[in-house]
Amino acid sequence: MFLEIITPDRRVFEGEVDSATFPGAKGSFQVLTNHAPLISTLAQGRITYVSKAEGRRTLEVDGGVVEVLNNKISVLVERLISE
Image 1 (tube, rainbow, N blue to C red):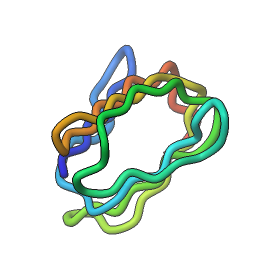
Image 2: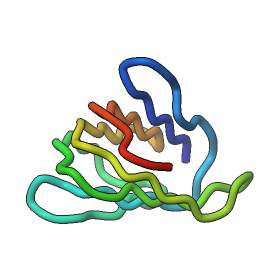
Image 3: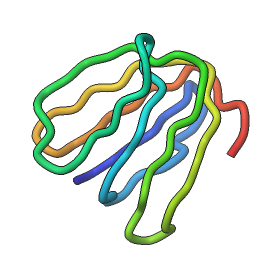
Image 4: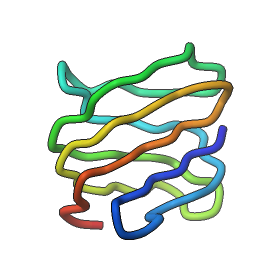
């Protein structure tokens, strides 16, 4: 599945991933291939994903929004705290 993570000033990541975990406003959740369509707000916390190119990677974010649709995950992050 395809993941893109964007902040107001840059594209943080774009590529194929096996899984992604997000800090949802009501608790963390994981997205795998063929996940049901979803839109959720994100709380401050960690986004973790397993990329075919980069392996396991974790980003600390300060909230945002995630959309999952047709094996594409679009993440709009308010602010990246650390990479």
